[in-house]
Image 1 (cartoon, helix red, strand yellow):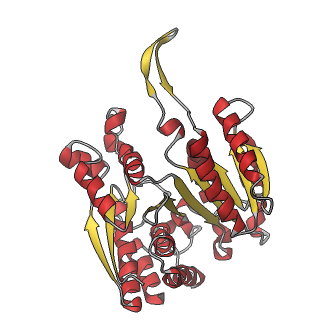
Image 2 (tube, one colour; image 1 turned 30 degrees about the vertical axis):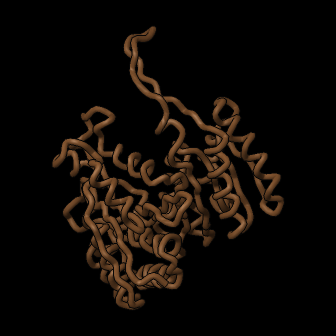
Image 3 (cartoon, rainbow, N blue to C red; image 1 turned 90 degrees about the horizontal axis):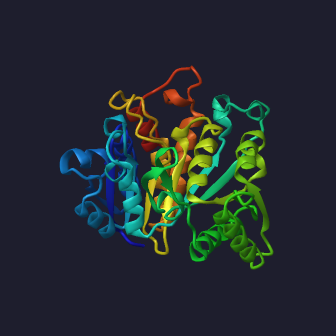
Length: 357
């Protein structure tokens, strides 16, 4: 097993520095336990990079990410930069890093822990019914990367964004999802808008072709508006979901809320190699930045995904995930998952996890 790892850390904006610091503390503890070393390189991207360099993703930051074994990211963005032109917004840093690293598959697990049932807004949680699903989101295509602009139109200035997918893009994300379903409960739901969008009709054609290669996986199609309803009506019906960039972005945020808090959901962005980008799915939460109230668990669980998927340390990943579960079972809560009860801060929650590894 490799004993030294180089991790690029994009702390970013808002609560980003607080939650990445928590994950770094956890990784250092893992290093102590398993006799390995993590070298952390601070990388500027997002609003903080705009403030210092006038652009959201300097070339030096891209180079640092490409030189690392993997990347840990906090969050980028905030109202301070909302009036900037689109190409200078902090969020462009995320798109740029993903594209530069060739990361096309975003893996977002969503599971309701029994201990957090009180924080879940669904009636089923109070009845002891849980769920465990994974959303596989295509990450480098679709509307977020398509042609865009403004022009003079019939009703004045009009803006446009283009949803475009190629068969190769759809096939590679589809295979990731089918393989993941094979390793879980062998059920895959593909979500699209094929009754309206031509890009979704092509998406569905490719997925049907792939489904014939995976007869052991139960496959179904679902329209995105129905999927949005089904996620809150009966999330337990889903195992693995595969969908486009924009639909995946929206549905995974919806899924986060029924787990009790968006502060609980990690994510991994992967390409064809082992290197990945790991980040919580939530934003920079500038309203609580610096207050110590942020929930670090999604970032810590993202670090666990890094250990498992990129660094070939599945036992260490199990340790981190177990430590998080034990801290929750011990009754420790940050404010977002406390359901009005007693809560602790970001640093204290990270300490509780470190102590249990």
